[in-house]
Length: 497
Image (cartoon, rainbow, N blue to C red):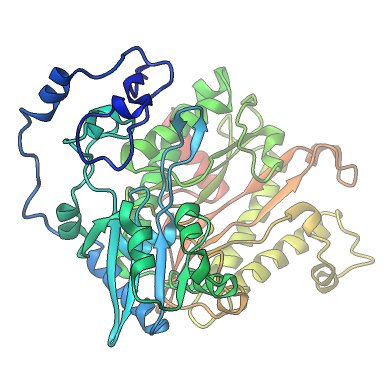
């Protein structure tokens, strides 16, 4: 990274180039350059070509986003609605984390830019929607080259006119959002909180916490059923994720020679080449690390004879993510105990997937999977069959010592999508065509678990796939990855020789 991202000349008002900047451009305290000369300022203002883009076609999701906004408008007649994208967050000193726009905002706009805000103003027949965005960086006051977030430092932004063509919404300068919203005719206002605390503070007098909580619940529920375009994006995410798993198997030799970090980096490379990023921190858990559900340190050894639990998903450039897990024998072959445990988890997943169908309860796939796991734990003698039958085990939740987590969740823009939805609309609801969820049973035997035979300790197995509810059942979107123990071994052999 270049050292002088912003020159020290901008540390005081005199450091800013003449223009209409509302406040001085702030630079690095210890930058190497002093004040900007009049001659340099004049040079930087002139001699630039016209790069405005014209005649742009709307983005693929623009029409779908408009339909979602129409449903939002119908829900809240007479109320102003504010949905921010969020702001950059500092990682350290003057570097920021990569920006990822809020899912509520992306779902309603298709846009992904920082600091943006979607506003719906109530009118007689519904709402007028507009976007507040950062315009292109200013060439008159030198922002484009003096400011650390200017065009020459971080890249070109779309102009407001370009954004209007792409998104199908009128666009305004977000730096005036607070002022314009406060000056508008008063109306009951709901806002998605925490993403833009500055704007939230400016609107504090007209916000109500209870109403805002309900607003976020509704926006979560708006994403429960995916439209055709969203399903296409999730298919693409699964395809790229399959490619990432294939890359990992091909490079297992390098992982054995290094660590779990090689696996993490290998999958991440595919995610960045074919999508935006990983959809969540990859779990690259080898050996006993597989018994830690969210092992993301990924700093352990990769040893032949043990298992690798890889839980990873590619996030598309439109921010839809896959979420897939496979448990792989590092040397390409399961031993007898590993296969026994793997087969139990596979059978549990098969039972769970079979329960995913329209009109079924969301809970059905979880209950079906847990029943299979409870039966195996009893059959193996890990639960005392002379004391408990399957029904009692499930009633008391005794299988959870070794299964721990729920068997799946909604999937979409977030890996745990629709998380703020009401229980009656999610876990206690019926499944509908267009819903996409994961089915991911697992068994985990901790290294220090004295209630199981020693040979079980340190073995963790999870199998996870992304399942679309269809009109007549379901479709496994990640089915291109082998699942049975035999198929996994054959697939690995075909890739590693």
